[in-house]
Image (cartoon, rainbow over all chains, first blue to last red; front, side, top):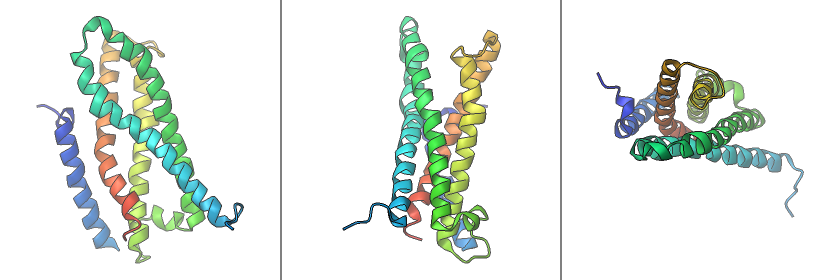
Length: 30
Length: 169
């Protein structure tokens, strides 16, 4: 199976997905 | 007149140095991931050593020392701001969205710094010939360094959200 990190587009998409997760965690904690 | 030796000036100075080093670091990270890695396979084989033997070692020097400067000035900045301890525990129990946000940014940045110094650089040393390795080891090292560099590119997106967003929260 191809690693999604081989694709720059998928890397950036995952970066934005992780950003949403971090935003939700900030709101859950603070 | 602005006092050049005031605490506030030194605080600002640390922020300025943190940003300078951060641009040096992430600028090179994005150069590797957005420009060099996708382009090298398109370069004729006989010209590739220009990148791998000359540009890459120099870029890796500024990349890893940029990372070192960023974390050093960042930790000093957090300490001088008085939120280092709270940010390390992600502001949990402190009811401070500001400290939670900068804490996530600091942890993401610290993971990225660790990746640079303990995964990417040791493996790139094999790739650029500073450390002896078999062709198979070089191939594996280049693959691991490349993937870890991609992980850092991924992490840089939420990391910058936290670093810049700290003025919003």
